[in-house]
Image 1 (cartoon, rainbow, N blue to C red):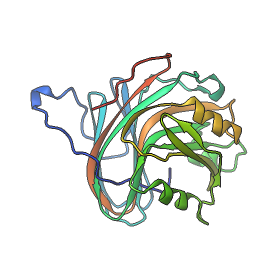
Image 2 (image 1 turned 180 degrees about the vertical axis):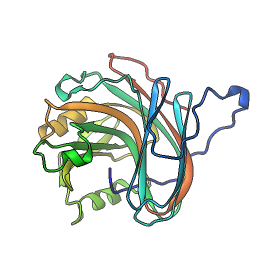
Image 3 (image 1 turned 90 degrees about the vertical axis):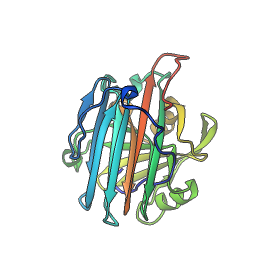
Image 4 (image 1 turned 30 degrees about the vertical axis):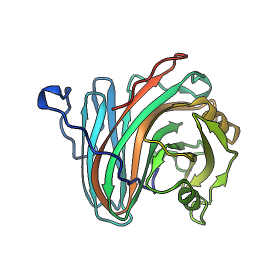
Length: 256
């Protein structure tokens, strides 16, 4: 998303010897989208971002660092499976499940959140403006630096003015759902009320809520990625990983 951020103190990395560490990519400190094996990483920076950042893929996980000094600056880091092909929302398998783990250590006055991010009908921000064919930027929040109630207050304030949708019980927790018209595109948010840094989530129940409230099912589900977004002054490091399955009863492995 283009406004909020994540920050918390989850857990720092466990110790590994050089011989134990899996193959890794180069360290990126720019906005390059890059692939290593079955993983791809992207980054977005706000216009007010003032600081530095690094990313590298090691095995199946993304390791990152961040230093951000502007109180309104932010970025997001993503990790996706590039083999997941775009298709209409209506063609997404009912059995699609997404597993993710987040290991984050940020300090500072800013805020952050993490979870699956789904784009529908992506055309590029500029081309999506005012052309009558909306882009949908969608967030599922599994863990954040702010409480679910604080996030609710942010999303429903006068600036974002979110429409509050029905709740659903998914993967052992209640999820609150929101719809926002943000600048020239739409956003759906689904916020877990019992945060967790690791877990598996069936995607179809959330798509059902979004679709019932305006998400077009004939437009392309462009992909799903693990995502961390930040906003404000903070610094630190972290890592995250994902696993995706479309087969029923598939065993996902996303734990560190």
